[in-house]
Length: 245
Image (cartoon, rainbow, N blue to C red; front, side, top):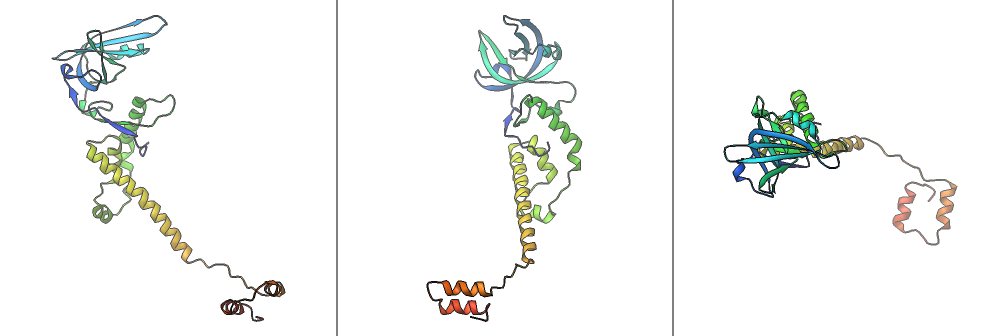
């Protein structure tokens, strides 16, 4: 989990007033839950609609077939939403947006209000769940990561520390730090690969090959069977191993 690299990132740190969001764009807004309601339509599909407003306007967040989300949104609760803006009639709408309820410490947001990692997924696992698992893993295990590079190598190549690199791999404070994190981890991968080759090469330098002595009647018969005469150089090399030639 610590070294599972995101496949891309989304910058959700730019929160806009609702009146400034653009139809057709992915936007991040912050507001207060004003009203909510859910209904079942033809075919048994549930539709949950939550009205979120700020001082500049109102946007309607809509989720399909997720009625359980209604319990998460209480009128008066502050929330951040991220999704694609659409116009439904005359209403601004976000379909199936990602959300973050602002309860307590707003500086510890995971899914919104920052540069957010997008991971490769497998079946039945969504971004929100995996992102939460990785954040909990960082909180629990990041301090146990030990630096493996000597300080002089880090200074020489202007590399950040391993713990800082792992954290900014997942939740970078800026895209520059994300770049530095990748640079450090890629350096480690190639360094260890080259180190393994160097160790193998050094061990091989002390190994002795298997020497074969070429002599006997079978060898002499083979030389006599050749349809050509050996050159002086060939005869010299051969005679060095076979005193009979």
